[in-house]
Length: 90
View 1 (tube, rainbow, N blue to C red):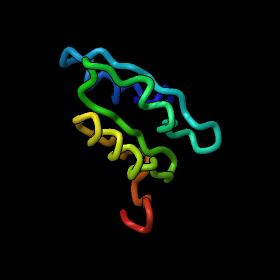
View 2: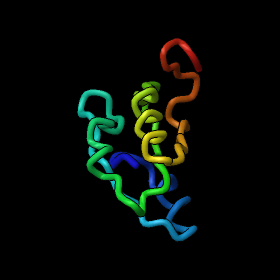
View 3: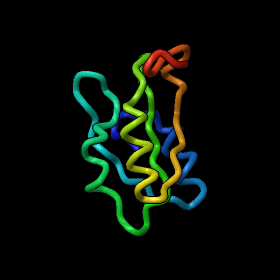
View 4: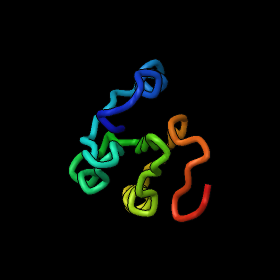
C-alpha cells in the first residue's frame, strides 16, 4: 500500500494479521508509484492495495496487470476519490 495513506487503510489489514509493505508515491499525484511494485513483491505478498487520492485514480491497468502476473488480489481504497474517474469510468 502507498506510504501516503490514512491509518485506517493499514489497520484494516494489520488487525487481521497482515504485515504491510509500503510503496513510495508519485510526488505529482500522491498515488502509489506502480512502477516500483515489481520490486516489492515476494512469495509472501498476497494483495496490492491502491489508495486513490484527491479525485485522482491510480493506474489500475498497470496494477491489475502486475497483480494478475503474480496471482495477487487487488483491494482498492476509494474513500478519497469519491466520484473520481479512471479512463472515463467511475
